[in-house]
Amino acid sequence: MKITEPPRDQRRRKDDVLARFARESDVWVATADADGLPCLVALGFVRDGACFWLCTRLTNPTGRNLRDGGRTRLAFGDTRDVVLVDGDVETFSRAQVPGTAAEAFADRTGWDPRADAESYAYFRVRPRAVQAWCGVHELPGRHLVRDGVWTV
Image (cartoon, rainbow, N blue to C red; front, side):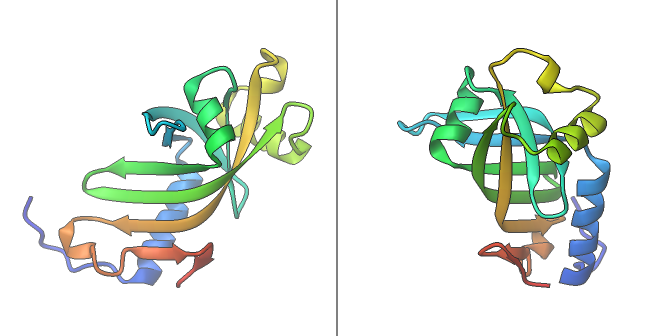
């Protein structure tokens, strides 16, 4: 890859990241169990402006890891346009999930887990860190959120 464009400033990166969150509906979700065994799956998501909402079964490794570990890394893009979100996870049963989050998830993904098996749960991911870069020349300045606060 030959880099011909100058690196984006942090304001532009933030705008690009927010646009990606608005247009995409799937994300790679990385978790690990108590022994450190990693798990990586793609899930649908919706963002409510501050947090991401995911849904999967509590009976599968990802659901258990999200619930028990309380942390995740979300990965968007490919190796030339990366967005990583490290976040804290809170678990909600189908009965506990806020109605606005469940409706937004159903509208965004075209699937309403509340009408599916009872083993489904919702997971709110509150970002603690966000990084974004397009190529090695953008590694400096890639941290857009630190300790849950936008740096830009």
